[in-house]
Image: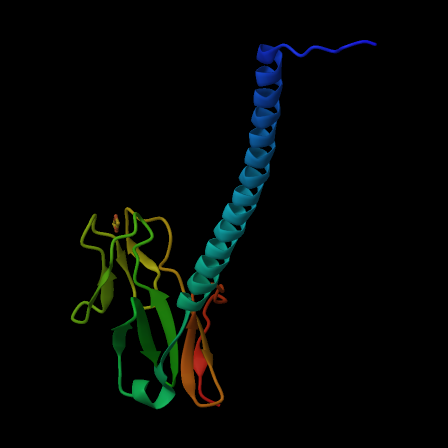
Length: 164
Ligand code: FES
């Protein structure tokens, strides 16, 4: 008859080993779970940011009729410019280093207070240091006659919005 003797210290080590392994396994499991949750949350945050961003890039400026008497008007950071029966819009950021340009009614031009770039009412460069015209904004009329600006889309060169 053989008696297997377990030394008390080996028993402790064994139990401790199992416990340690168990903890490690659970730790790994929870770690994976947490990181999966973390990734999900990060993904959700990213998606909500991009959808908010997309929404904030598209906005209504007002009804077409509200802009019949304007010459140049700033709204939501963009400039709406009337050209006879049509409208077009330009972004208000200087294309040199991004300062806000100002419309000078007397001079009939946009001026940048930072380094002196100037643009005509169509956004074309009159004076540097900028090398790029003001960026045109994509405009669209919806069925209710409201003007929608979409900063995520490129506006074709010389684009003009007309009613009807
Ligand atoms: Fe406008 Fe430099 S940022 S001229």
